[in-house]
Structures are given as structure tokens and as C-alpha cells.
Image (cartoon, rainbow, N blue to C red; front, top):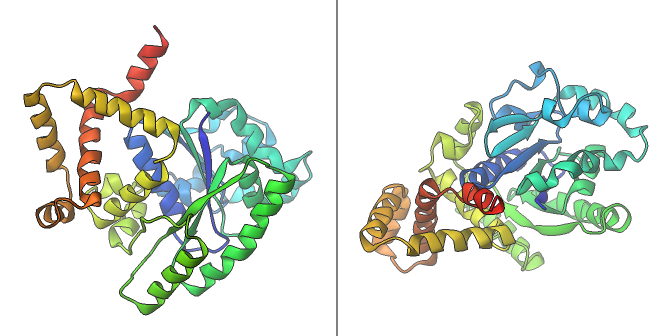
Length: 330
């Protein structure tokens, strides 16, 4: 069963859509099959992936109304990354949808038949705690808070956590709080440092060590309809999101299995082949990591970055999903 994760905070401009898009992009790049669900009627996620939200003939609204099939609506961006789009028509239909039987379960019922077809289903939530955010949480196995180091996003955490407790109690008993990721960070400022200290004190086990710094390349990527890994894979933004997603998926059992697969494949190579793999891996490292390798060769984040690039090369040589399918057909 795939993980269903909502990225949420009832405050706009905190990087929820950017985080959902780039998390899904990195997971898909690693060979995981990912479905991105746009639950914001503004359609920002849909547009970030390069689609004109308002011109689409069908969106998630048709699935809520049960007037068409999942396969008619889902956009296959590539083999491992699919998108359920949204646009402003869904907002206009909110009153209609709320009159349906058990409206809180609309998204859960749509995803339920397909949850085993994806490794991850990621949901981009609207910047409110209204109907569509509740529907997203009811459908999710877990959620991630996306917070920028500012006063208003900080104030939004408490009411959201109270909403989580109510949803868990009444509508989705298995819902879990995965963690909190900081975005749009600039720790040169005292205010950002103060916010970080507050979050560390209040969420010592839930605050991700990885954080996303302000980076113009992330904004450029959205204007080009691309993930940061497609737009500028060696940028600071790509490095930050790579670190976050690696931490995000570290404890998921499918990731553990996948890493074991890569390690076994690497160890099966002869010495010359191993050297070639590592040579290609080092070529893909960002300048920041290359400099760090020279200065801090024993630093964990540097070693992890090289291991990640090595696994990417192994994935190109021995695609994980093909191996799993072949094993299932035996």
C-alpha cells in the first residue's frame, strides 16, 4: 500500500506546492511511482507541472461528481509521475459537494482503488483549514507541515494541530503527523534563527534536519513548468530538496528495500565496473558538494550525497521497478 501524504498549512506562500512538486519529482526520479493530487482549486500544482489548469477538459471535480473515470482524468507526466489536476471550477462547486453523502470521504473513495498502484500519493492542500483540506487529511496516512520562518505561519500551526486531532478522533483514526519542514529559510537573519529555535523546542522529534533555503532557481522552475531537478539539478534548491526527500522517505519500508537492492547490485559488480559507477556519480555532484568533499570528506551529508548519486547510476543500469515486476512474474 502506498503512503498518502498531505503537505499542509493554512497559510499561503509557505512553499507547500513547491515542496509537493519537488518531493514527487525526486521520488519519481528514484524510480518510485508517484501520484500528485492537486486539492487546491487555485490549481497551482497543476500549473507548476506545466499544465494550463483552466483549459483542462476534466479535473478532480469530475471524479468527485462520479461523471468520469480516474484514467480519464489523471495526467501521465511520465511513467512514474502522474497528476490529478484541479482548477477554480472545484471551488465554485464546493457547496454542491458538501451536500453529497459523507462528503469528507470523497478523496479517500477516489484513491482507494488505486492506492496499491503507487508507492507514494502526495497531496497539495489549499491555504485554508476548510472543506478541501479536511477531505485531504481524511484520505491521508500522514501529513507534513510546511512552514516558512515567519510570524504568521508560526501562528497557523496550533489551529492546524487541533484540526488534526479532531480528524484523527472522528474521521481518520490512522492519520499520523509525519513532521515539519522549514522552507524559504535565510538563517543569516536573527528572526529566522529565533523561529528555528522555537520549532526545535516544540517539535524536537518532528522537525526535519533538512531545510529549504531561499533560491531563485525554485521560482524559475515553477515558471517553466518543471521540478527543480529538471530545471537546475545542480542548484542549491535541488540540493536542499534532495536532502529533505532523502530524510522524508528514510523510514519507509519500500525505501529500505530499494536501497538494499542498489547496494546488492553495486556489490555484484567487478572492481573496474565499481570504479566507473563512482566516476559517473562524482560527475553529477554539485559544485557545492565537490568543494565540500575536498574540505570535509568525512562529513555525513557529503558521503550521503555521493551515495545518492551512486544509486542514481545503479538505477539507470538496473531499473528497480523492472526488477520488481520481473520478480513478480516468476
